[in-house]
Image (cartoon, rainbow, N blue to C red; front, side):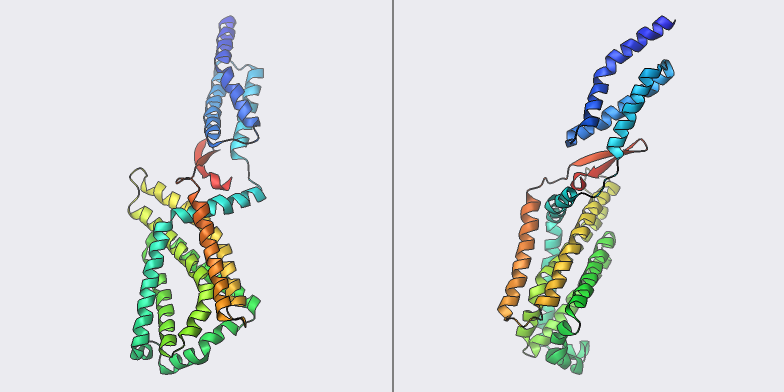
Length: 339
């Protein structure tokens, strides 16, 4: 009887030995491709099954110990923690963030067009109908806005404190757009409030023949700042769109999860974008420089950002490759942009 068990065990080992050796190679490999990670997951699951079978059929101590070490090593390779790495930071800014922004271009471009159209209409209406400004903010407030308070806003606080306040405000606005995107309506409301504020302010300034002051102060930082808001709102609405009308090949939950993951990447990248916009608004907008130079600085920063996300984002695959991790015996997907 013992002879039969030995023969069966030898045959079992001979049959599966190539898979175990391949798993050992993958565990020891310094870097793995997406296909190799998939192979590692599959071999890990098979070897865990082999270990269970060996334990139940013939608990050979040496073989059980070998397979146990191999399963534990494979599991550690798949689930090990990720420490800080400048390489991952570089990959985030060169791949993850621009790809997430580029994939949402139709959404945030549509937001930008709608917002600018609405804001332009409000400016035109308020500028052409002085009574509307009186009804909206009052005659005295409109006069003060045009004469001093609009320009004074940019010099009211010390530049470093002002930059921090602007960064916090814009980051919070973007976070609201991303977090409330699945509900759609809150994002539209936030956009309307900002379009109304900008449109009425611009209309009042134009009606008082202060259009040069308005656009000279808003343009340097506004191009970059508003683009960040458009991106946040567009990605937020994309999450809502995934919930309302998911792609045919995805479940509603999976579609929202993938769109939400892109939202996380965008949120992290926008933190830096709004920091740059805040620095421009605090230090460049009120600076005693020629208007053309301040505007040129803002336009240069805006074009640099657009070039960055559109060029790098377009070079990446349409769908991010997924690596997999195993947690508690359950296979989960993880975006390669974090690797």
